[in-house]
Length: 511
Image (cartoon, rainbow, N blue to C red):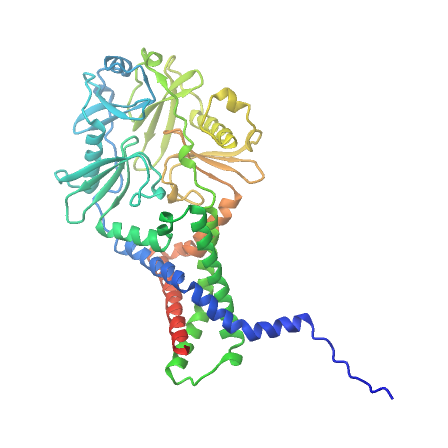
């Protein structure tokens, strides 16, 4: 007789996986948490400090905006052409009119990009004019006309204290001998204030760069590896948070050990309760941080997109500067075979800004000139990007196909304030917004007064920007006011920090 053998049903893959997860999830949570512990403390501690240093306890200066003194037509005794010829300048890139300490000057940018100053009265050059103008601007910003200056340095590259986020180059760094060890940064080429750092702000910049952006890795490796390491740890934080929610939220009864009255039990209790409550903060901070960091793998190269043609003095020898009434800025634009006076008129009370183009030969104003010039620059920059090279001649660039070559401009407007996708991080105003009808909804923001690309935005940038603004910087709470928004954000980051420290204490007690 053949004995019957009972055949046990095979355990399903789903059941096995579930059993494995239950058996190992607590260990995974501990392991992932420990691996991510130090980076989490770095990020949350420096994040908590940010509102305190940049907003709540931020030092102040007398002015955070430089309002240039206007130059009137009566201040211009000599025209630009004769002044350049007098000083043996046969070629240059551009000019402006500036006035400081009661004297009007031609501010001339040479083909070597150096800025020189010549009197509009007699044509004589002001020795070290750019440094003197920078110091005048810096003293105005500080509100102390007689303050002692330690040094004035022209920066042509970004530094550890003057970061890329400030955008403007070249700038002058003017350092003062005061109790705050104040450094003022100004861009003389457009008469605008860049930023300032006192001793406290310098320390915070170092802390934030070192512990939040992991700038210390730049000394030992490249940007790609730094970003990869950061994203790896941020991913571990996300996984640890998910595992923690599963353990302490959904499977707590299966892992609960020890008496709740002892020290280990108390630590576990608070680690569990606070951890579950702030798990959403942990996830959103880590996810948006990783998403933001990944974008940094593609270097921001907006600085190289600038149109800076050389103008021959003979081309403007007979030109007379137009009426300067109401003009707050003036320069020259070489556009194909034509040269235009580019004038900016700004009403400081209403912020209404008008940029006009007047042909230097016949005095005719170019209809809708600012938008048309911005479109010209956008096409140049798009062609330059396709070539991945410096700007070249119009003929060659006209033959290069780019994503906007055949696209229609859906919207063209002058932007005079920061809002929406064109935030304060871009720094430059006014700019022309050109929204193109492309699959990626490509939008160019062009600063026509410097012939520069301020930024280019596509759908992928909008998605990342939305993620970072709402999940990392809590911009969705702006309606509460900056103090309330920063308070919520600081509390959220602090809760993640507390959970991390409690988790470490629980681990140490278990060990």
